[in-house]
Image (cartoon, rainbow over all chains, first blue to last red; front, side, top):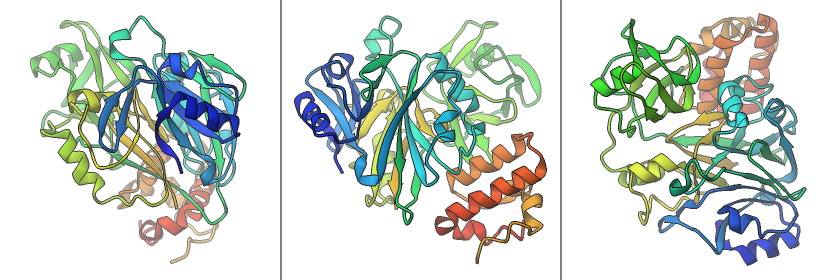
Length: 328
Length: 71
C-alpha cells in the first residue's frame, strides 16, 4: 500500500481514480487537490525512510487506506466527537485528523478514552499543524476531501472496515521513561496548570518547573496509565506564580514524573523500531517535538514513514510519541 | 486458553478493579484498565464491556487472556 511523499499532481491523479487516501501536506498543496475519497490535514514535516524532511511546496504525503478494507468517510464537530468510535464498523478502525488548538482538539484530548467502544474499535491518527514559523498566525486545517471542504474545528475521519480475519494493531514508540525525580499530581484535569502536588505538597507548577531548569520543554511529563507511559508535553512555562500550558491535558487521577533525557533520538528510534515487523503496516506518525528536539531533519530513524504532527492519536491523544498501525 | 464465558465471576472482579493488576505491554489493554477505574457505568455493564474486549482481541492477547481468572 502506498505510504509516501509524492507530487501533488500524482496525488490528484490517485484521487481522480477514486482511491481512498489520507493526505498530509502544506495548505497550498492540499488546496490544489480535487474532491474525492480522501481526508487530510495541514503539516509540512515528515519522517521519510532516508530522513526527516520539511516540505513547503509541490508534494504531499499520501497513505492509501483501501488495501486494509472498505473505507467510508465522515466529519464531526467538537460536540459530537464520540461518534468517531461510535460510528466505526464492528471490526473497524477510525483514522482521525483534528486541527491543533481547536475546540475539537481540546475535547478529544479530555474525553477520547471514555468514548463508546473506544477500545473495541480503535481510533488512530494525528493532530494537524503548521510550519513552526507560522505558529499563531496561520490556523491548522483539516480537509474533508469527500465533500470538498476544509475546517479549523472539525475532526475528519476515515472508517476502515477490516475483513473478518484481520485485526488492527495499534502500537506506540515512546522514547521517554519516567525519571527518578518527584512524584507529580494535578488537582484538576486540563491543558493549563497552575498548581500541582509535589510528593503530596501543593506548589505552583511553573515555579517548580523553573526550579528544576525544565522550562525548555524538552522533557515531557510521563503519566502512568496502569503501566502505559503516556506523555504530556510542556508548551509554555509562565513566570513563577503563573500557569504552565501543555500540548495534552494532565488528568487528576494520573501520577506523573518528568522524563529522563534521551541523548540520541534517532539512535533510540532505530533501536526500538528494529524489533518491529514491517508486515501489515498501514500508517505511522511521529511528534513535531521529537523532530525538533531530536534534530531529526535529515536523519533516518529506521524506515518508518509518515507525517510529523502536533499530537498523535492512539485511542487517545498522545505527545512526543510515534504511533504505528498494523493490520494483521 | 479460551476467553471465560460472559457469566464467569471473573468479569465482575476484573471490572471492579482487578484488571489493573494484569501484566501486559499491550497499550489498548493498559488504557482499558484505566477506563475501568474511571467509569461510572454499573458494574454489569463494565463486565460486559470487558468480555467483549477480550473476545475481540483474543487472537493477539493470549498471554493476557490466560491471566483473566487469576487476577
